[in-house]
Amino acid sequence: MDSLQDLFNDVRGLQIVTLTLIWSQWDWSVGKVLFVPTRYIPFIIIPITLFSNFTVNSDVHTCKVALYSLVALDAVAITLSEVIFSFRVYAMWNRDRAVLVISCCTAIVSLVALIFIFQSFLPSVTFGEPPLSIISGCYKTGANSVIFASFVVIMGAEAVTTALTLYRAFRHFRHTPNALIRNMTRDGVFYCLSMFIMSVANVLVIFLLPIQYSELLSTYQSVMHTILATRMQLQLRKVDRRRYFADTLRESLTPMSFWRSTFLADI
Image (cartoon, rainbow, N blue to C red; front, side):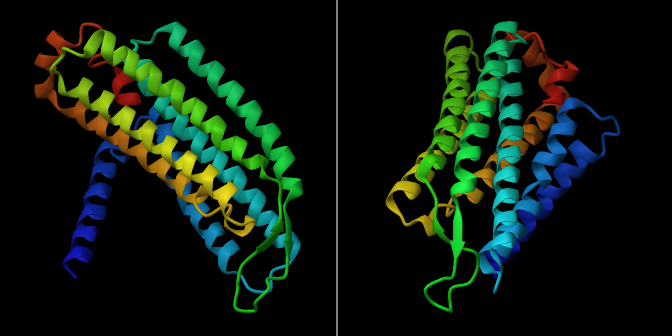
């Protein structure tokens, strides 16, 4: 009972933070435009996933529509999250154009690769009757394993983001005691490593388990992408709202001239 009460308090506290830092700001910025769909797209993904897993007597057409919808929504969720992570790296590099070019090239290459992978994977998925009547949901009977390449693409994008974060932190911020820099570096590396591990787990599931379990962790990964990305945004906005932090920022954020700029609060 206590654990349920703690969970309720945590959710309530998060909603208060969201209302204070996001919805109380009447102006619409790039960060807010990214935050809204990234935060609330799981409320579309999860019901479709539940329907796909627990529907009864569904035809092949319905299962294919659910599959195509989930793949598209997962891709959008992960893409939006990656854009938010790229904004954080861009801010850490003081809006360096080279970093912007690297991020844009990585995004374009990843997007093109994902489109080709999905075009090859989706038509190969077949559905059929489950071997037991107690098995509900859309039952996959076959699909090629090319979908594993999509997680490799995600790992590549995460590797670029992690490398840029670590290099910037090591070269410019390793002796800086500022809490904002430590949070941006620590959280950024933790988030990227978490997503990297999830991608590895998805690849292992594809190759080690039957085709029916191929989507065991994919929805979890896309939802976690959105949670971590939006949590990072809320954390940065909280720091930006703390006026007492300004004095230390003037002294310790020399390589990051965006302090107190609208860009920091806009990530």
